[in-house]
Image (cartoon, rainbow, N blue to C red; front, side):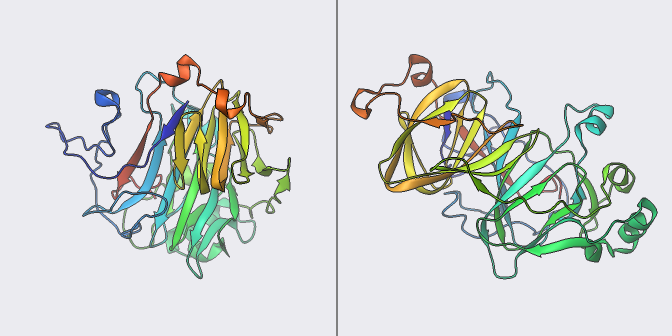
Length: 348
């Protein structure tokens, strides 16, 4: 299992101009970030990213932070966890489902969900359309720009969850910090770009778009005294865990499991995590102990159903715990931060 520390600064790029972010604690085996080229636009954050990250945006504002497994030899996970920061609305867009993605040579499509971490007054997102719309009328709305009024905008606040299945036309508005869990893939068909004059992908967008209103909001429900389920679908399950001060449990990562700390802090095995820190667990059992203020975290793993015994009592008394050799030998993973570029959130 791996913990994702929060990078503090940008190190000097090597001669091949690949830019690295984060501490070089793992030596030469951490993953490079290759800068993208293209026209810049200011849809992303210029502000301090605290408390979600210690990164300080410089000349290239940071709009996304990706949590990745650091070691190149590590198996590629099914899911991707990222943080998104916006100061202007991102593009209206749509993602393909698995079948369409494979028809164009990709491994899978993209279903995603958003957990609202912060929302400025009046912040909103769009998901689905206001009314059923046939493809010819949808094309017309894209071409004349009225799709901005056709999508269903809704106000959001901290703690809201928005489900965005493949095919759902959607957009993220300004003034938001969002935790996004998604299928690993970033194929995006842009339908409207709010005057930024980048290319659209109307034909493929219409081929995958569902011209319907979004499904009704999913109501959260309690699974146990410490677990709350937000949603479950074939692609992933999203829930939260809430531990009291110094409370201990065992996290049983039978599937790949992502944990993002929302509040408080805690210890995962021999590693500490605080707000904005992420932990990845797979095929292992990890003892988790909340700090003095407790611990609240998002938890995501592949679907379709919630894992019944995801959290159980601690495996041993804390004074006797020691990580298995396989766990102890693994270095922390690294946070990848993508600078502002045309490759922003799914090329928004």
